[in-house]
Length: 126
Image (cartoon, rainbow, N blue to C red; front, side):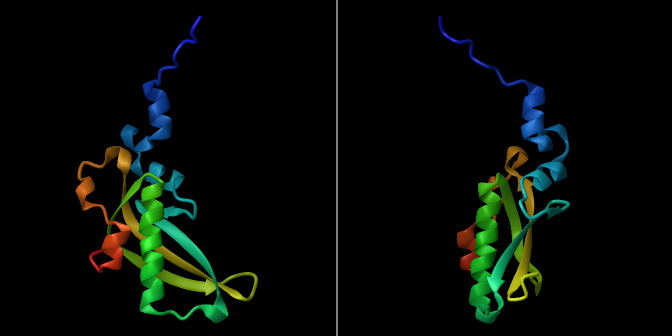
């Protein structure tokens, strides 16, 4: 006898995709490992302070990483990724760099073509 196929209920979908239930900020927060600020996805990088050059190239690489991680977590970045600042890490040798970007949960994105991709960040388009 074959096992019965499980069906997904609308309440299960709402738990997995709160944006479909009218709570996009909840979905952004649940999909953000380093927190969120409303619809802004936040990503922190911990770097060795003595090796951090604070150059445009380093920031661009981190910004592309932020866009990539947001996409991997089911969020579509919109617009420019911002560098929100740095602070000394508790270990005393490192810095915590914080970046963020506005996002739209992929589950409710009606304009996915407007997604900021890592390539667009590197090419200076987002």
